[in-house]
Length: 242
Image (cartoon, rainbow, N blue to C red; front, side, top):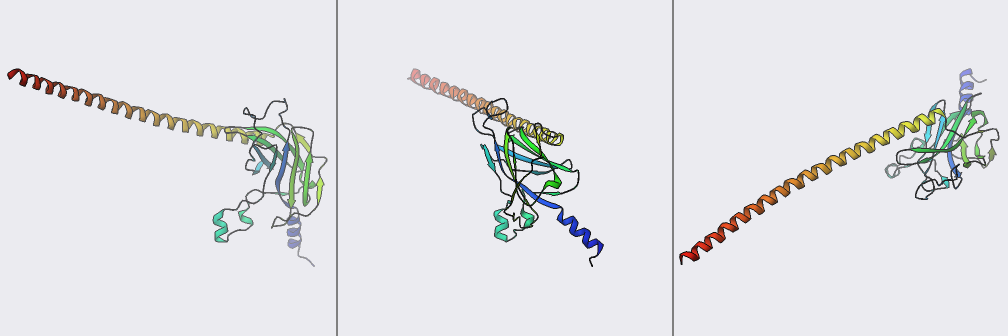
């Protein structure tokens, strides 16, 4: 006979899923048929997962891609050399508890230097999660999304595919996504402004140094001219005396 606490622990553990964005495919143009970037390159894809009004995963960008792919593990060379590779070194996963009437959302963005343009996303009921390969498809800008779901600490995914047909496509980012992107944009702009200010100060210092060197050079030329003039005068006077 199981202790009540043990039974609750097993139930709690069984409702937690580990997931990550494995692949995303976007349309070749934006909704208005314009190019993704002014230079004609494909978007720099970056995904965000929000659960309970918290950003729990923000992927690195898959640059210049219509089909982006991500790996769930980010291991540093130092960790490998030290033999300190464990589940704690995993950086690109999200853990979600499946609960009735609780949903999570995934948003895909085109990442730029100071902003992120929303591409598309989905809202998914947490109780629809199952271990395996989850595929979401649409006829919109975010055409396809592949999520790997597991309950294995080693991130082993069963060879099983499923589709969540009642997931809701998000034409607009959620409030949390929008607030997060705005905050990042503000931080990036402030960083650029500070960088520009520092560069301006350095340029001003260089200009002042150039002016100082110019003044010294002009003074040296003037002094040299005076000495030359005096030397010539001395020579002329010596000739006249002879």
